[in-house]
Length: 110
Image (cartoon, rainbow, N blue to C red; front, top):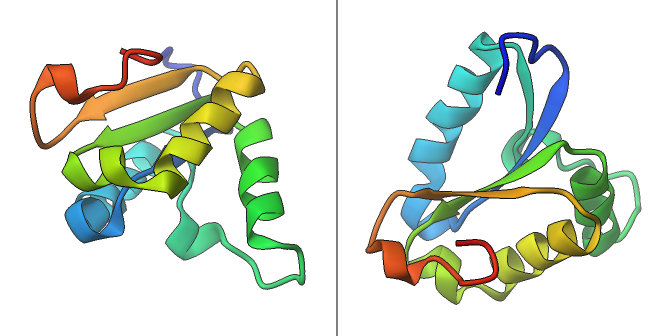
């Protein structure tokens, strides 16, 4: 990604049980680099919209989905739904292997 990253929305997909502290730090680091990370703990609003609609809207408004890959994110139906939604919306998915082996990255995004 270029130095001209200002306001580029990045959707962060991860499994809380494996990766929450890592993703919190990643979110702050991305902001320091002038990206606009969408992190559920900070960006999920309680505006009455269904959870799935809020997630879909955030993915559609992103230039990339960053999938933090670990055993629980691979097993998570929520994470799978997020990256499948991104692919369906032509939002590139960038896997970030944090835990596990490279062959654990789903073939559709590997």
